[in-house]
Length: 360
Ligand code: HEM
Image (tube, rainbow, N blue to C red):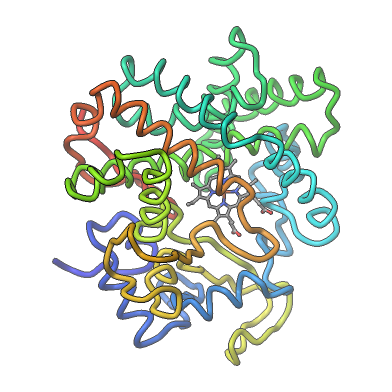
């Protein structure tokens, strides 16, 4: 099989892991002149970049993508903790974390089971991947049943609209969705930042958690002895999902932009240059876990950087694992799992999330 041509092509390649390994071994931090970005694939470089104060989540000159300026989507974007650094991020991240911690795992489990029970008999596998996290988050956020379909559709439109390269129709849908979702926030008495980050709880859940569910399905289908162990209890399924997250990172990469000249592991990076942090590769680094290339839910402890780390670490990690573990158990208990996820044929055409596509 031909190796992927770059760390971006790797996201949708049938098996990017030998390529990631060669990057880690030969050039764990290098400038890819084809992509025009630095590529960090070793755990040390990825971890240092995630924690470097001068590496920002947005280019200094373009805090909000030009195409979103002056729109409702742009206004939401400007208030997302995911998309900001510095004072705004430091002020608002703690509240996002408190909101995430407010939900007990049992609340998440119930919401995920209810969502799976109502969605899996109706939808295709690919639609379940998108709808399960969204519907679960809408339930957790207390969206009334009568508004749930619209709310989930708007959150999806918003997510598609802020993806790079969205076309005019997708952008128009996103603006309408952002207005409707912000009006919901106002009606709940939330301020601008709270309303925007309420949307993020749904938007951030979509591709990443859909990907985690998709990879969990692939591993459960491909490894009957280990899947039998996972079926023994909710705890065993959680352990399985955690190993899936490490082994087949749904968010394969994330980006940072140099706000000034800096040194990353002694490598000079110039102001304005971008760094692609390959989380999926760092997760297979021996510095993280022994025998990192083998899928082993029975390993004693598991270290992963797949949910990020440092100031932008994912506040939804436990929630995502709980959604996938309970959603998968619910669909398996209803005997729908094998029919839904029996055949996969590639990955969604995305540049950062690796989300399996299943045959209908
Ligand atoms: C219920 C599901 C989820 C929710 C609500 C959620 C929410 C969030 C939020 C709000 C942030 C921004 C934090 C910040 O910038 O300070 C974030 C970051 C992040 N999330 Fe999640 N997330 C979810 C699922 C996932 C999953 C399944 C993965 C992958 C396994 C993931 C990976 C990440 C990563 C890598 C970041 C950091 C990105 C960066 O630093 O560039 N998330 N998440």
